[in-house]
Length: 397
Image (tube, rainbow, N blue to C red; front, side, top):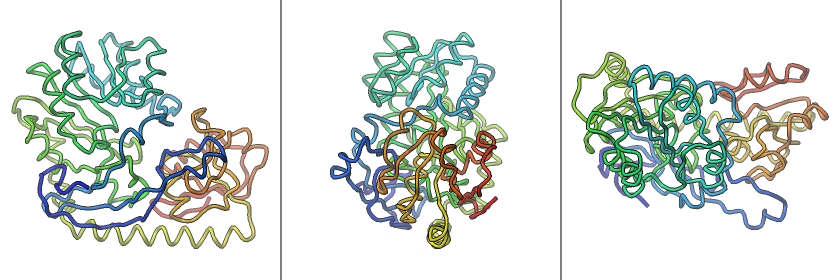
């Protein structure tokens, strides 16, 4: 188990939330035969008393987490739109000739960069997902973005103008390896651009359901700035994004430069919100447990008289159905071919296609992918039953 904070390297670490032993959020089971082999892992959340960083100190082996990965970004239209916009942002703001993306998934950013005339090279640890990207004709390396891979890329393609990672940097137990690799592959005037789920949104919306084994760290700009400067990067700009229920985009340079207004405003906002204070995160944990208890009790009562399904077999779904003991759900709807036909981790509820959902039409649908609730409702406008979302508050409509 880690004993030092990932951001400030301090040892003043405090447990704020212990969720017990849970299955992996993406540990979908291929069949009933796989149930006896399913493993549960401890999940305890800590906060740093010095910089406030929220983190999981006892990581699961990434070889277990990311091999045979079941998240393909290009199957989710809002993410496709986001990465199209991100490619345009990178091109307009930084004018790169070569971009290296770690955690490139199925090439959802590499493709629009290529269309804009930018050379793009991806790295992803999940071989099955990297193979999908390679099949599109994209330059993708299957493996970890470390010093060896960075040196290989630099020798083959030359120095990079931008290194970027979207919803991947915070998944790493040793972020210093990524920063060291970025230093190797980047040109002297290059930039590091990171997108990650933001601790400010975690707090504001009580998004406890994103606290799973894969998501090891929830950065504030304050904590990230400390980490980046330890490895020779300087925050230039920061911008909040709606992606994944609330994310942050940070642009950092290898040379000291004045911070832009967006970064300065965010740092001031974090001070007002007391995001670096332990008491803030202890309060977050208490409120999260109350939210879980409310959803569990309400649906336990509804199940006595009504048929209930869930929609969206994402990591959030695994958290809700296990924390609320929803082993009574008739099905969990998901359009991804990487998930449909499998079983949910923990509760072993069948994951079904939207067509099967239409055939049954249950009375209640619990939208576990609540950050995509509007999109889901528009796609399933035929449905005449009751929709429900758990966050920011439990609502029915």
